[in-house]
Image (cartoon, rainbow, N blue to C red; front, side, top):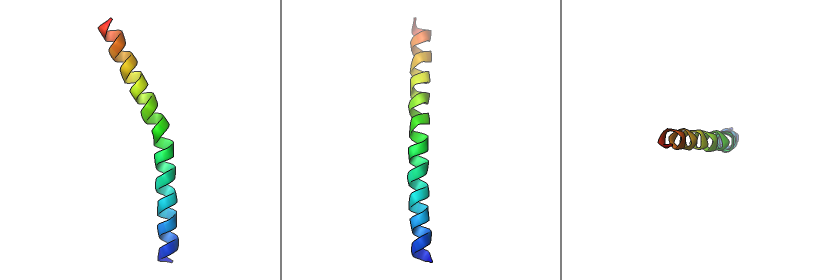
Length: 40
């Protein structure tokens, strides 16, 4: 049972990273755009 739990944890972590990566990229783009807008 421990092995199965570890596998689910690994899968959950991988899904979490894959899902959060695009959001992080979008956040960076928005922060960069807002900074550029303020500069100009």
